[in-house]
Image (cartoon, rainbow, N blue to C red; front, side, top):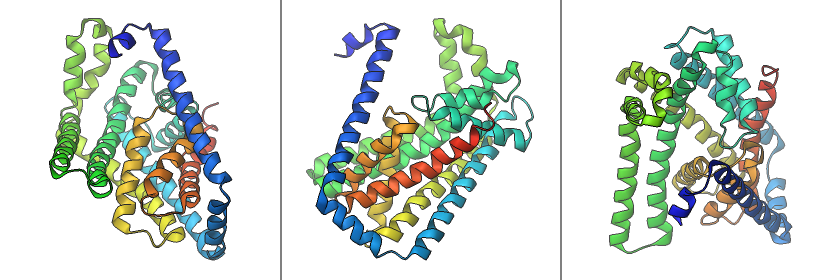
Amino acid sequence: MLSNYQKLTGIQKKYVSLLLKILVFALATWYIVVKVSDKSNIEKFKTLIAGLEQHSVAWTLVLIVVLMLVNWLLEVVKWRYLASKLEHISFWRAFQSVFCGLSWAIFTPNRIGEYGGRVLFLQPQHRAKGAVAMGVGLFAQLVLTSVAGALSIAWFVCKFLLPPLSVQFGVWLLAIIYAAGFVILYFNVKWIDLLVGKIKFLSRIKPFFEVLEHYSMSELSIVLLNSLARFIIFTSQYIILMKLTLPELPLLSMILMIFILFFVQAALPTLDIFDFSVRSFVASNLYSYITTQEIAVMAIVSCIWFVNLILPAVFGSIFGF
């Protein structure tokens, strides 16, 4: 199967990738329609909403929006810091580039358009290297998502699927190795530059990756701490909304399942503009182990998707034209 896929041409692989995205979206959408069509689910959700205080809901949504702004301002600071290896950009220009990148990202698979939208604000000679520098920041975020996600998946398997002890040991071992691998690679990101240099057909783009040689261990640590602050913020958004609507959920299970949700989001090939369906599908299945309020979980995930991605993308469109 793998060898057959490797024999496909570039265009054929694009069609396969597109088909996979459509299938994922279609499956998730069908699942949501089924759940929302279930009258018992609707009644439970209506009862839940009726019990919420409007004042609390309003202030909670304001807090979620404020956290979104802080989250993206931290990304502006990180992007400006990473780009400083290439050229000095003002905070305002970095702000514009980050939000412009968001507006491009929602219409492209796996947010690839974010690179183009962001580096557009750099000098032309620095744009290719800027994309690589931006990749360092995204990789820092991926490290945290992968570490937290892998360990949380191991916890989930052992707690809810109850495999034999030998399997549990193997799952935890794989999760730890997987997480450690990401951390090691991140702090040795210059290895990527060395690897590109050893692959003959990539020799033309080797100069663009040389920027990786200029990030020291302490600088990478600063970027990772910034990413950790962002990770805590968007985890807090979920916790705040879930504690408002589903206060009976056990806190530890709630948090670890949020980490698994982030991990799956990062792994699945989707478009941001349709991502709410996939997020809702994953979250609903995960949280079904600790709550029967599936529609409430979908609503929470969709709300955060809208606040964190769609609102800033709409705002960023101002800078993209």
